[in-house]
Length: 183
Image (cartoon, rainbow, N blue to C red; front, side, top):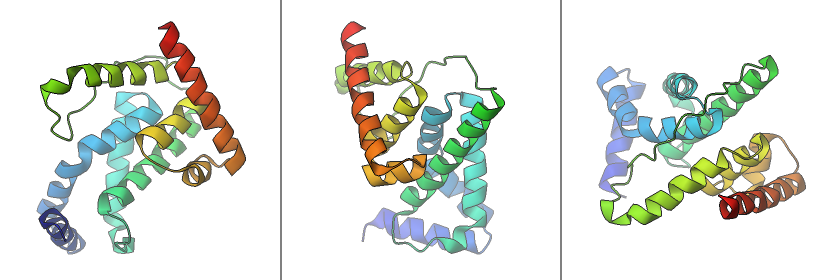
């Protein structure tokens, strides 16, 4: 078991005991990645911040339900994704979806060095091009390619059939390819 995992488990135990310093440490470890996850779905930095904060609150109040069968980060990311999709759908129903396109900045969460500049530029171009896709294409590709969920998980999260999920992701990839070629 890695040192980091042991330390995270110890922090989570302290969180269960109500230690705010442990909650802050957990927050500081995960907030950038969780913000980025929310942002890719809700497409607005202020809304993503709200979703992320709500997700952390929810995670800390429901921490006793965390069984440890997945990593804490994966469990937290699932909460963020579910809250993001719920928030996005709620905004769609209200027709209050923001039209502002905010430049997405790839955060250096993994300590990637400057030597990977061309890879980062390509990733940036892909993310920017994904913003031009239809919403269901953008969300399904984000969940599948960026967040790493398989077809079954994406179909469950998006509340669509497995076959529809595969078709949507296939069409989304094709649409993204065409937009990348024409860009």
